[in-house]
Image (cartoon, rainbow, N blue to C red; front, side, top):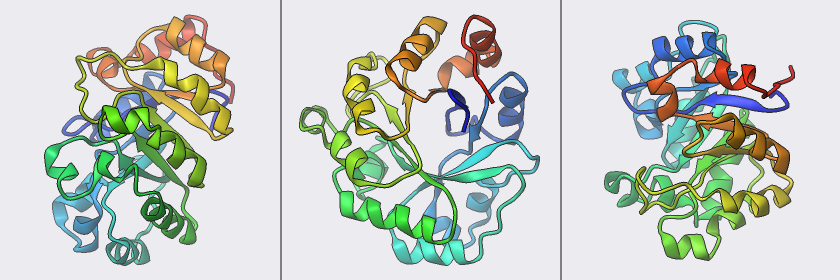
Amino acid sequence: MKDFELMLAPMESHTGPEFRELCYKKGADSTFTEMARISGLAKRNKSTLEKIKIPKPIPTYIQLIGSDITDLNKFLQNFLPQKGFLGFNLNLGCSSPNMVQVGLGCALIKRISKVKKIIQTIQDYSHPASIKLRLGMNKFEKQKKVYLNLINEVDADFFIVHARDGKQTLKDPADFSVYNEIVKTNKIIIANGDIRTKEQVQYLNAIGIKGAMIGRAALKNPDIFNNLKQNGLFVKA
């Protein structure tokens, strides 16, 4: 990972290989696949396996969603990394009712022991394992700082913090105020949510955040990664 990493966010139906390659050429340091269900990967479901393909050596993290350790082991036993693979990322940010109702996505943030097992299982296969999370499933969990408990307790390679809770929509502003306390965990923290300007990125860099994940702004303008670098953000190799 670079001193400050610019990442393309995983977005359903958008971040296929072609768009990942485009954003990488436009300055993204790393990219993410669309989320793939662990259960589907374990069953060798064709469409699920298609999501995790890395046809060209573009720096790519594979994002997973799920919690069944048996399924995870079944998948990892047969997993062969393609060139460009950087590691796995566990989705604890999805707020879709279909996922939350079965205890996945942001419903897992408070289940620290379960998340520990998932991350440790991935690491036992010698693969890097990171987490993308929201600030809790709802406002109450945010106030209880369940996200901070998880970051403190889990030994993931890095944490991408989407600064909204699970009940908030993309119309609600991301809460950048949480990052000052989160960086005090001394974990590697990547910021996510409403990041569009060099001033935001420079602020995050100054307080100790190690990267920014950009999604919707990249859909509108894939040049945003190079624009941020050219406008005063210097990312060292």
